[in-house]
Length: 444
Image 1: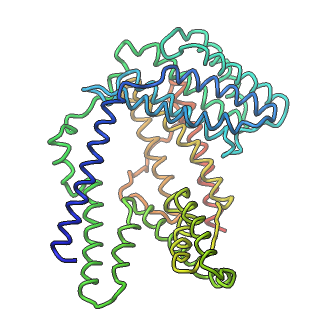
Image 2: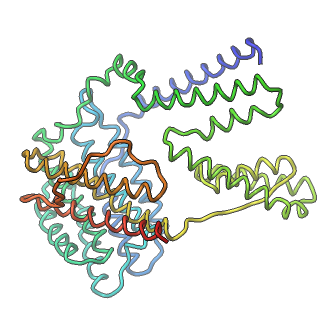
Image 3: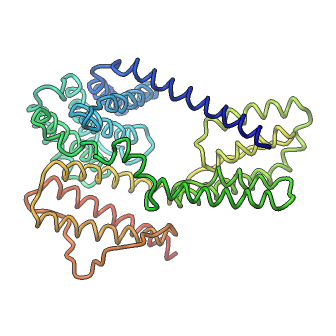
């Protein structure tokens, strides 16, 4: 490509970018104030109905689809509650926390995790009581009204759930702790407490927001430099050596290099495995594709699957390769699934993520003394140390700097903080379970 061709493509790209940005700006101005009302109540009522139907072994696929739509709406409503001095206002923060709660609930009730299941009549009775409470909560404007009765009944169910050790009750306890915290915040949202921590930092002003990125220790700058070095090396090879297909180096580097090292490694592995699987099995499929019509039909199926698959996975790489080879008169198909070991890791980390989010909200809500902060810091240092060992056994990139924990006192509770102590203890147990699970596989 000569300079004239480069300038033409550059002008085209700039025109498209300006058009897209202008369209987004106009859309945001027109639809900024248009939003639904009562989404929280709808989500709670629907959640209660889903639980009741699951207890009766009824089909809930239609309700789940509506539930996921309400979840997205909650995040959109939270994002729309922006202010000039704050990332979001008090109402937006409550919606954001409630959206997180609904997202966690959607994961468990949709059948993606087997933890939310019942074994006997006692479990069914608890789920039935939980469903009735959630539906009752949905009938009230709990973010803007009186919540005394809801708090009392919620604490009763929480205490009941905390006494049991089954996965069902642990999941329910996480739900009630988060929901009761939201109710507590809703009662105090007019006192200014919620507006204390989420102010827009001064460095995020226009000038600082731009200049602040041009430092070698920023995430964006490091990725840009890494990408530039790789692409320049590939382009240099393309220009110096007379190889007709060397442009594939640059194109694949651009597609596979990701901001995170683990993500890049994962994309490279899945792309290679997906492409290799297609190349091996294509010899078996080729004899059955005897006409152009066969290839076109298969290409249509592959391109539909390609755009619905999750980008970066082996399945996506298979569909992409299948489509490309089909268009050159070759085709095949392949699929893949998670193994049980990684599914167990995913289940534990889901619970840990839920607990750490609740701890973050509780820590930011209340200022504590030096002793409590010291306990929390040592708890974090020990947790970071164990997580680093797990990363090492999983052959993931370790942290470069770790705090020396020798001589520190490890304590997963804080006197006078029952809610935070419960979360710290539960997180520590799940971290121990994760460590033992990975260690057994590592030693095998």
